[in-house]
Image (cartoon, rainbow over all chains, first blue to last red; front, side, top):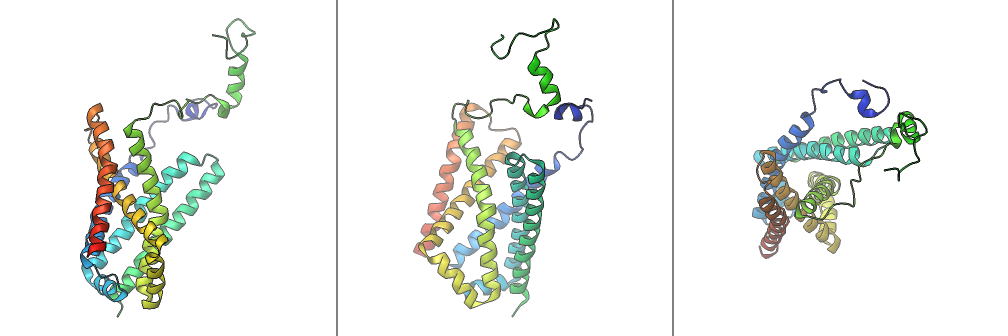
Length: 126
Length: 150
């Protein structure tokens, strides 16, 4: 273990023990996106009527509300992982990388929370 | 062999540049990772996967939230959303997002196949790299044809 290059500093420390986690969760959420995304797409194509009344009545039902709620969670999670890769690949300065990751985490959680709240309001509202 | 630096000053062959590299790790040479590759279909589909994925994350999720908010907030807010979505630029964004969704889905399914270790044979790999964006384009055309004709 040296103290010169970045590879030299970590050589011999072994695995961080969570290297595959990001990769795996990106696959799990991809499956969620696939199922819920196709459900949303087929529902919208089948519905045909895109007025507020028709869409609100559709999303007021339990199954569509659950599926779109899950779609929001799965897509925001997947997007957070994907944008993390973008940040890691193109933002090289440590301070900027930290700021970008902090902003990304805030926006991902805020976006998912807002989307879920809207779905819950439609599902439980009048 | 000495074209990249002057002859070492000492007998054990330490080049001045190497001594400097020890103290400045960030200035070490990196591999020429861009601009030296011959273009192939796998590179194209990989770049499309990244572009469509980040496009869906940055634009698509924004539109999704706006749509859900407008539905939850009521008919007046929904009219505002529908007016923008129905304008020419709104249609461009919606068709673009549909294409990005199908393209990311097709190349994502290709990733699942590659993940189990299949599809790396040169001919197969090239074939599916060409097919995935074409299938995505076809699915986009089918969906919007159905929506418009319905």
